[in-house]
Length: 319
Image (cartoon, rainbow, N blue to C red; front, side):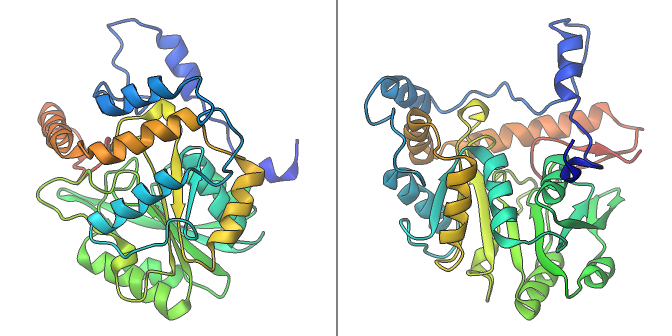
């Protein structure tokens, strides 16, 4: 086994799911699937594209121009800055691809990446897989949700720090940054000129009237933010495996190069489905449904140490 895998545990989720089978008496808590369907327009567009020449090509390596334009429009629609679709957007084979691409392109072995604790194991282990050193900064559970330890965050920054890496909402905790936490991230990134690797796949799935925050819109953050998005969550298109990276014109060539040698090219017919999904922009009604399900779950868990989520698809116990 290669040294880079030392200390990286394997996933067992698939084994747990296989053992459970289809037994209706088993309450599945091991994975993050959803029964909310993808946008109908995306399904139709994907089916229509299968077998066409446009959807069955190695090119363009960094994604279809039409999809890049839709991604850039999405960021602007949510209050973010304008990015050039051709020079500042890379289409990837899902979020796992874009996370590893960003870490390989922007960090070197031995350099440090700050991540919240708890966080998604796929983020933490990709830092290690890329040769980086994760610096865990705790989230503290309260009866009103999770809060980041900002003193610990400040103390975690060193001359070896190259990035802060999180999603908002964070998976699996459902933590959503408040204004004070965003201000701390902005201050650290701009003062130290370090990157924010921002997993945006659930950014609009926020509860309680919370606003969608696009960190690239914060002062000084446009060219320091590397947005890692995709259609798996808000658009419920888990199996399409379409993601994207949006970054500065300076960073994007390196990101695109790593993507080509890592993921090569995203599925053509699934890119066409993703274009239709972003144009449909149908997530708002489903956010209300996810919030209803969250609230119902918290009611059913009354008396247990469940920490309320402020967004996303999941929540955690304080165990």
